Length: 332
Length: 270
Image 1 (cartoon, rainbow over the protein chains, first blue to last red):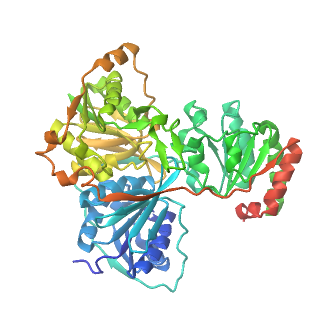
Image 2 (image 1 turned 45 degrees about the horizontal axis):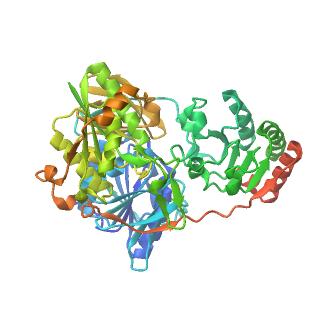
Image 3 (image 1 turned 90 degrees about the vertical axis):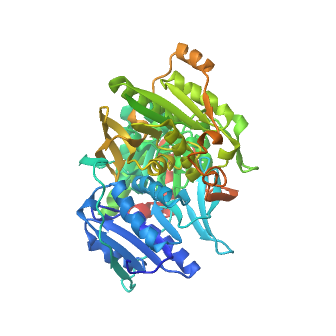
């Protein structure tokens, strides 16, 4: 029997090569709220090749960290992570278990839920305790037009939680908690071999604070350079609507929309994007939306904070120049 | 011979389907049904594997009797066999109960080498069915496969997009992969195959066909631990809605001025 309590609220602390992913701190922020409302404690599980960041999870509000260290956790091996998590979950029987809805989390969580024969709610954007003390999971459905409120009758109640939906838990070095060391289990061989990893980082639009996206209003694939010019002084990244991706103008990793990335940057600049519901589903939660479109009736203006009715080929260079001056002088 | 299984869901055309904000639900009569687009990438990958190493493809769907048309389309695109799981007792299933039903049907189909799923469906949007089926069948899975690098009759070498990178993994059969839209470009079916498939008989299995392999309380509504209590129309964010017209250079200047005044540029240039 491992030390530590049974029940409670649990989160999965996702790490990549030992570095804790920020969604883990967001889960701790939300998990802390839920645990406090339920009058229970907050535990997190960290399976890592390098436990040097473990204390940080306690500073971010965990009462307890179940820490398992093994070089094998340096690779995204769902089978291995599942096996290690299952042993703990079966023994400790948490009430609630939250996992970040990263690709890895979305791949791992269903295996665990199926093994425990419990319910799993995907991609939650809200988690609450209702008046009767029940755990309510809220997720967008049908391209974000509605929010479904879901409850789970089995335990643990499992949710994957969208990245950048909740605030990171604030850091307080005074927070105290315990670290429970758990011996790692090794995996059954012969099923999946991880051969190598590409050196190139995948672009991660979800992490960007500024995104300048292009749509059908662009006339040529090379015109993304124009958008890059605008993104550069703002230290942003470019994006695209689906038609341009489908036509092979730009890699699918840049696609913003329901079937692409869902982003919520501080500033989203839509250039020549009409605003089909497919696209809006991927960016309508951005903090500030700027639209540049020559068609004054384009639906994108309906969700924008600032709209310029005009030709992007004229407006974007002007805007770039002004921002280069503005942001350049800001640094000096 | 490689036995390949492709689970397929019939979904409304999400680009066209109308949403009734008053009722808080989609109006399913407003758009045609079609195979889930991601599942077509899964099927295409199955066809490529069959062409390279030989094999047989079984398309499997759970849904109402009308989902037959979706399975006919899979036959036109290269599936050799199509099975529709249709029964009132399968209905109102969440992802777990759906996965249990599909996994049970796969057990009944018998030996298989590879299951290929789309990364998610456009209507449910969970991406959970693939990994859940893999767990229920106790086989390994690799998710978010964006490229298949090598194929043979006992394993695949694939590129999986996780942890912000591409991990190259070898999956030894039997196993399951979920594929993204990057994995291939589904070929359009030939007219002759489409016409032929339209006449094809689709096998139908109900609960009776699976009853020796699964308890009734693990499928359908009863087997679903999650339930929707309430649907609310998503609140729309308040937007300033300021529209600037006129000369491009003046409009650009006005925009920058507004962004500065509202403190937005400062937020991003800290």
